[in-house]
Amino acid sequence: MKLVWAQIKNFRSIKDSGKIYFNPNLTVLAGKNESGKSNILKALDCFSKNTFDRDSDYPIDYISEYPEVIVHFELEDNDLQNIKEFFTLNKNSSKKSNGVTITRTAESNEVINIEIFNDTLEYIVTETDKATAAINKELRTRYKTNIEAMTSASLVVIIREINSLLTAINNLDNEQINKISTILQDLDSYFDLLTKIHNFSVGAIFKETIPNFVYFSSFEDIIPDSISSNAEITPIVNRFFKVVNQDPSLLFGETSPQRRRLLTDRISKKVSGNFMGYYSQDSISLTINLDGNGINFFVYGLDNQKPFQPRQRSQGLQWFLSFYLTLEAEMKTGSILLIDEPGLYLHASAQEDLSIMLNDLSVNSPIVISTHSHWLMDPNRLERIRLVIKDNDSTYVENKIHKGADNNTMKPILSAIGLGLKNNISTFGKRVVLVEGYSDYYYLEAMRYYFNEILEIKLDNFKLYPCLGSAQIINVLTLIIDSETDYYILLDNDKAGQQTEKKLKNECGIDKSKILFTPAKSKIFSAIEGVFSEKDFKEIVLNSLETTKFDKVLVSKKFNERMHNKEITKLSDETVSNFKEILDVIGIPQVEQIESLSK
Image (tube, rainbow, N blue to C red; front, side, top):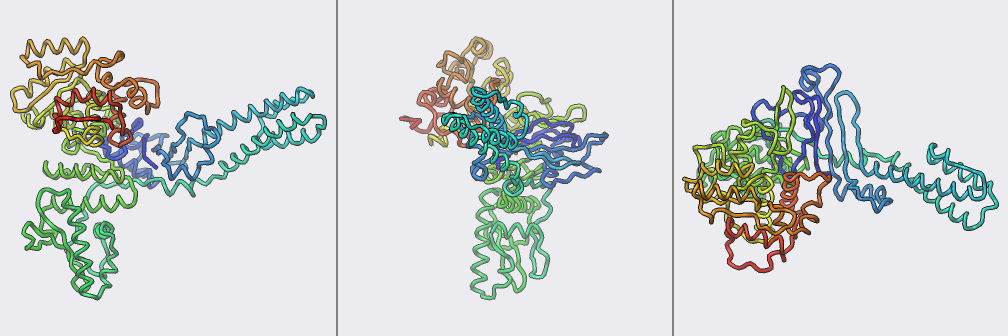
């Protein structure tokens, strides 16, 4: 099952969180201190344990309302195989009946709502009404019999009554008998299906596949200097051996010196290689050796000559190593990891390493973190961020980062994309592209990924900064115009964009080579949406929408998520060519001629 959204009610500071939509890989809950970020993670933890503590989890003003957590999952192919017979009836249905909603509360049993069953029941009711009407019509042509009153009875009663009625009728012709018999066979198959739904064991099929939420608030359990064969194995040591896929009892039981050395060398090489792929602060290696009935852990430095015990190294290294082992071990269980304020005491470059590790490991298993550190917010993946906001002592979540937040909440996000630290212009990077809004940001981030990863055309690095309207571009520009940062400005090809261009040239002296317009290719859109071919925009960009309501930012955000999840792997030559006009300037591809880009 894949986690889609959750909603939390009456839990601690949360009256109603609203639906919290999760990124398939890494979701970042961003908010200022005391906004309620931790309470969201703790509520999901209570959902997994199906236990709520009256003293700590109930709202402080509790009278009659009690904690409730609703989590919505999407069934994946292996889940659907177990219930495929329930959605083969209505082949023409346009509904995406692959969701399971689970509600768990503090004072009642859980409720599991399976969409496929709801749609199947709805279909059966409709078809049953049609069938009984058809039988009624056939019977009424020769007799005064009317069975419409039976439709309110259960299906089994209807079938029995109709069968009894038919046996008493000897004057129907063969054509009528065959027609009614066919209808009855359909009704009988519906009854069998209803019986299966009624007897369906959710626990037998689904409960084992419902992912667990695993909550971490700290990583104080660090690798020890040594363990002995008769000592209790701590959680972190257990995780260590889970990561290297080794049973410690087999190590202790091994008597051959050669075999012991072979096993410990293999374990040391595996854990050091994987860990050092993420930790760039120092060149180290983690090794173990067997000494009689004990296992010793050592950390070697760059020269690989001096063995240090783990406790002799910095707390930052100990924390990072513990964090890595915990993540890797829990990934193997298929759990969804909930991490509260990771890396809170790491310095900036170590937090960047941590961000890379979270990004990579979340591909294997979803991770949800809470943070107010901009170092843990990838400026190229702002669609992962959910704002946690506290209003009138009540916490709620805003899924759209472009609305609903005050300056304090937005500060780490602004810092992540290059604004907010006015005295540190270097956070913009070597090249920044100022765009009008978040929809421009999301579409261009998606297309940057498409060119880099799908078409394998590597673009030079640049940062995109959404200015929340063309009028704000000049304000942002003043922060970087005298710095060493190279910049470009992308404007919509409309009246407002043309007016902004005049101001930039006349009032700010900006060279026209720095000002770009979205290519005016579409008769419908003059903004960034018009860079897509009309067919691509209709059939690919808008294809995943679950509502007819057109929200520009929501559409672009969804497109960016689907692109990064590789749900979109093919765009038309027209779309690619249109975006290439922009990216040729701001991205400067490292190849001169690109032929058949979308092939």
